Each structure stands twice: as structure tokens, then as C-alpha cells.
Image (cartoon, rainbow, N blue to C red; front, top):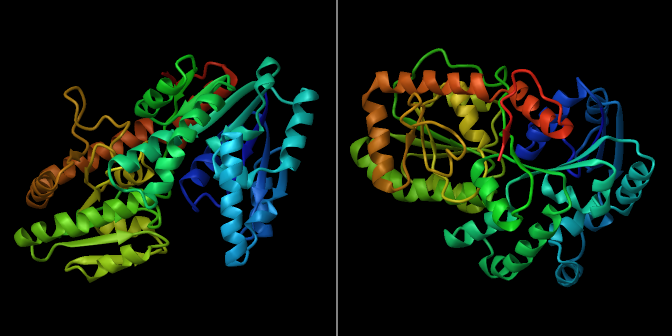
Length: 418
């Protein structure tokens, strides 16, 4: 098949963030079996070498620059620009971040390709790319939007949990996001989400949508299984530390859980590991036992040194790379419902793969159990790794995505329509 993949995010190297990792690995899988054209936007941080490495993976790489609006402006112009974008957003019923990256050059290229019937399927890698798909495209080409998760549900959840950095703005935008997702979901032949919770949210917005669950995966070579249990009292939380859901999780655990945990285990440490820590995250390093590392050369090395990985997320939808990667590395996990979304870890009909906690006391009890019981740590380590090997490699995930994009049954794929 001839497949066009649209990604406003340049998906290489596959280490810049969750969107890049997912897009790159799905692209890599499909390109080995189909003719794939990637249409993407290049930003200043992309090197010529990275362009050539990405080009080698696809039949055709089409790049356009990001819009000139991304160039730095004076404070006055930035304020005026924000107001103008907000007014335009209301008029077009489209979020500002979607309009901000919109490229007429990409639109013209896509329109011409559809008119010429060059492709059998078009995929939008992340919902921000939906803007280039016209409702009439469904008449001549299969259209897929890989939404990752509902933006409306994400923002609503942040407001409900008090984790929004700009609550006044998000409350103002919430009705717009609801209407926006209703509208764009109706344009597509297929909608891809990462968990059934995501699917529930999209179903409420668009009851007639064809929704498919395709989770994230893990590169097992990048996250090898650890060789020994460190048997210390060291906790780790990983993630990009300028993301609102990670900031909220780090603050909750450092300020509410750690003080009580250290009453039982004075030597306990909590490492917050990830790039771009904000000032409020850096300030957590002043708390007893809390370590803020910033970006590190090897995430998996620090995972292997940790006794337990905590995923204390209280907001956000979708399957979490951080949870899957820790499982792949063999680190026992204590996590919230949000951190375990989409994963069968403690149901009666499956092996115990993680401990669940949503409140301070539950975290302390679960972590204490693991600190005291080496056999339980080994059980979670083994079963977590086994789950990833069976269900969450990029090979398995790619098979499921291929079936959505092509409607061709794939041997061995556990395809999950919602």
C-alpha cells in the first residue's frame, strides 16, 4: 500500500519525547512493509544528519519549515499575537496550537496528492495534524487520526484535579475543545487511541466513530532487563519535567508522601529524573531525600539502580511510556490509576505486575511492602518484564497499527477495535 504519514513534529531522533517515539516506531514498522511518504515540519534543532537518517527509512521525505510565527518576537508583539490567535481560534473553532503550526504549503501538497489519488491511506500522527484532512477525503482515501488522547478530556481532568498551570485559560478553552474534537473526529475513517479510557472519552464526543486501541511500545534493546535487585530504599520517578502532569505528580509525592515515608525509612531517597525541570520542580531538591537530576545520559542506568519506580500521576489520559519502560527494565512499580491506565496488572485473572496506590497512605503501605519483601520485588520485576515482552514491543504495536491503516488482517496481531 501507499501510505502518507503527516507529522508536524519531526520524529527523529526517537528520544525527544513521547510523540516522537510513537511516531518514529510506527513509521519504522510500516515502512518495512509498505511504501511510506512522510510529510513533516523541520525546526531549528534538527540537524542535516538527522534528516538523512530519517530519509533512509521512507520512500519519500517531504519537509517544510515551521511557520514564521515561531520566530522570537518583542514582548508587545507576543501579547498582540496571543490575543490575535485567541480571536482566530474562536472564529475557526480550532485550538491556537493547531492554528499556530498550520502550513498552507502542507495543505496544498496534501490536496494535490489526494486529487491525484497517490495514496491508499493517510495517517495523522497526533490530532494536531487533523487540520490538513478535509471531510471529502473519506470518499477517495482511508483517513486515520492517531489522537494519542482526547485534548478536551486532558484539559478537563487537569482542571478537576487542580493541576492546570493556567486554569482561567483552560476553563475558557474547554467548550471550544469539546466542539473542536466533535468536529474533527467526524472527518476520519478510523480513530486510534492508546487505551479504552481514551476510547470512552472520544466515544462521548463522537458516538458513531470507528475507534481502535493501539497502545505504545518499548524498545527492549534500549531498556534491557536489570541483572540484580539493588535492595536499597531508593525511589525514582521519570518524565519530562516541564509537563504539567509530571510537575503535579513530582510535587505531590515529594511534598506529601516522602515526609511520612522517611519517618519509617530515614534513608529513603526520591529521584526526579527528566529533562527541562521547571523552577518549582528544582525547588523540590531542597526537601530531605529528594534529588532532582535534570536530563541524564542514560535513563535506564538510573532505573536499574532504583529499588522501586513510582508513577504518582493524578492527571492525564493515555498509556504511559514511563510505566512501560520501567516494567521493561525490571523495576517494581507503585503507581496510580492514571499511571497504570490501559495495563492489566492486578486483576484476578492475571499475574501481579504492579502495586496500585492513589492516596498518601496507599503509597506508603505499598512502598513499605516492597522495601520489606525481596520476593515481592522479584515477582513484580519478572511479571512486568514478561508483560512488555508479550504485548508491548513496537513489533506487536506496529502490527496493530498496520491493521488499522490497511484493513489487512495481520498474523499474530492482537488488534483491538473499541
